[in-house]
Image (cartoon, rainbow, N blue to C red):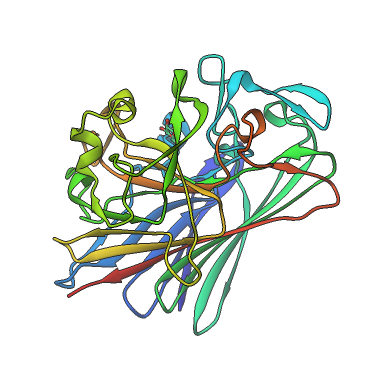
Length: 349
Ligand code: GAL
């Protein structure tokens, strides 16, 4: 395994470092300390052509100015919290809201906006970047000083393994994710609608007003949300289902069933021969398809098209703290949070 590092700039008066891990199969992963963000995933296609298969901004400044969440570590709480309000062990809390009256992706200075510390470690079989940060008591309105470690490991089997570990000194909420967008064609000007998805999920969370979960978990059977036998993502863009129409695609939490040893999801692109298998210990994956075009910034000189990439955001269900039966995302001082997600990259010739 090869490892290299470069200083790419400064944010909040602190140097930002980018690390590149390269495996013997020609896969190389670059991630930076700003937001513990993955900024490039190079992999060959079926003809041996190596391209970047994730969405990334052109510069560090663009990440800071536009906060696109591309490839970033999201937290403390991924997704939306209704009105930024919740009850924690009997005490009412109000966190800082940043999307209308709700909180999105951890608030205005979420984990994706911090400059993390990092250390690298490499052996013959794998290389890791261990990102660490301390999120101060009161940051974005959350109680407790939170110590977080997020490790990215690239293996010689072409797995990108993300592990999360966190502790706190007061009860708080923690439900992180990674917001990487895949476009396996290697061309972000080509929509992901012809990608195939297979997903081991029989239910999804309905969206109500303001893209908040309504609280209902609906069966996928007979809807465009059923990918148990696989299908093209175009169903989300073209169908007449009110839930896909509501957001012009998917922006939905899917409940995962988890079959031992089986991937929870497989995303593939026949044309390039590339695929990514996802394995996670989390209850849900939020799938978002970059449902709108973006013209407030450009990438390589072009605005970003609608459906430029697809996220597979593994996490506990969003707004869990306010929705009955959505799980418990409280972290107490005597607990250690831990979670793991693996994306395994493959090429079919
Ligand atoms: C997703 C979220 C979307 C959108 C996106 C960031 O996780 O569900 O609604 O906010 O992040 O652009």
